[in-house]
Length: 369
Image 1 (cartoon, rainbow, N blue to C red):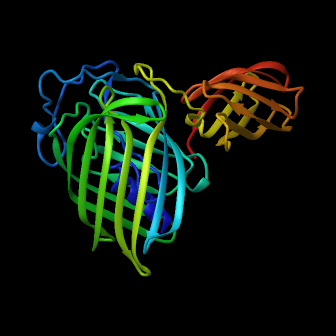
Image 2: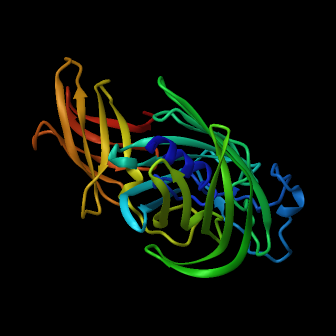
Image 3: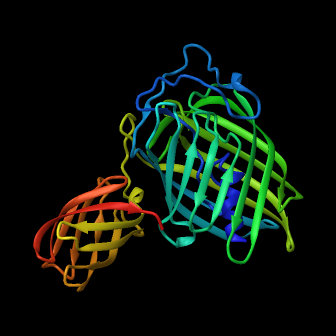
């Protein structure tokens, strides 16, 4: 049930970018590589005209490879007004290989249900529509449908969203179909977030039913999300959905908001070490290797590094340390006499260490589970 609810949140509330299960792969396309935000075909349900933004709209920044947007999401499930389940998730959406046609991939790493470092990939068209989405840990995909306002939002913009989510494992395969969800950009307003004040487009929607396993089920979904005026990226979202269970109706309330931003061309910069959550592979110049996990530390601005290393002599070492919000790595292998230092960026890292055959350099990359 939690897996399905997690991916309901990605399909229903990829539209809203929060929701039951508390994780998100939402967001919208932005101009790539400094592109000017030119419009194109919609690929959505209501035609290309919806993407023709009025003259004089704010120019968009170009998305850059490695741009990282970090969010916190809190979800509460209630029955008869009583909270029976809650979850807090921190996740980061990182731009990967933006194209000149305004399409790009987002890498999403998160702490869903405290498993740590789950990773999914989203392929986003220039209109803000899914091309495909995959989570290798939960074996789920999402396809079809526009879920955001595209790369140039404007007040009055509307569209209909249609999405299908399929999850499968060795035991069961389940699917969820959301049809003709009406979405509208209703205002441009300034909102206050942990990263500062941001002017954003307010996007609202409601849907009264969806299909699970191709059986129609009555539900109500309401959400309000805000997309940054200058990057078109999601910055905050509030969502409510109600659905029936064997134990009675459930109301799920989720709130997500931006807590860190490290984007090359964005005027707001509030680095968060949480963007480094996930699994990292380290390779030394003498071919020794480490596989380490970066996990959240409660009440700390740093994240924790911990993992195992193997040197040229096949001896096992334990790496422990931290990464700071600006990416500075301070760690040791098997104690203080083997320092391991350097820097991480969104997908890569480098530095030096005393390990194996002595002082040598290392490189790192974020890896898929």
